[in-house]
Length: 259
Image 1 (cartoon, one colour):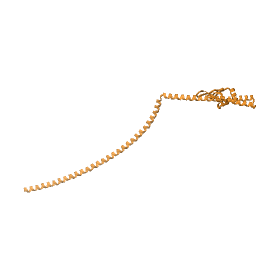
Image 2: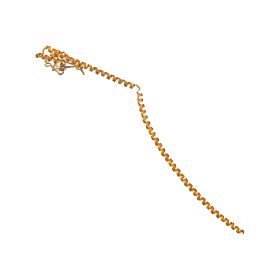
Image 3: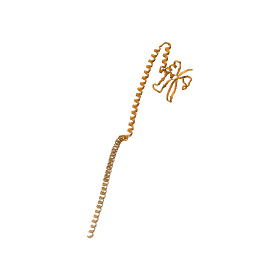
Image 4: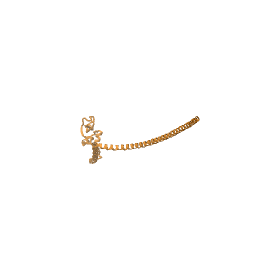
């Protein structure tokens, strides 16, 4: 029967917790086991390993096989190193005192490394906690400011923002209106100036034309009168001599008849 040192899973879903056991290699993972050697909690940082050192070392020396994870755990706890030193004693390379000295030295160095790692993890945890608290404080202040800004008179800000916009709009529209008026005013003045000269010219043209027409008509009338008057005078003159002559002739005849 082959004996194997392996892990037996326990714990809840998402929170594994393992037992280190020596069991028959043909048994199921969570089935029967020969001896419980310790526990392993991988959820902690660093991982928490608690084993029966002497019993585990005895199983390793008796030739028990190990899974990869179980081998890593035993190496971490120094079981494999102690077994290596004891094998050196069997071969005569080391003494028991040297084995204990070297193993104690290894344990001290390992403890220092573990303590430094724990302290560094604690410092990092404190820094992360402080950063998290600062971020949370900043977020709370920002949220409080947003709530205060939301509850306080935002309308004044809106009015204050709209007022400059209205003033800018008026300022933009006013010059435009003035420019339009200025453009329309000169245009009107020019139109009036153009119309006024045109009217004056028309009046001036019409006035001389009327004067000329009157002047032309007046001489024509005078000429007609002048023509008619002389004609009448001539007729009178012609008639007058004729009458005088007739009167003279009649007087002559009367004289002759009286004689």
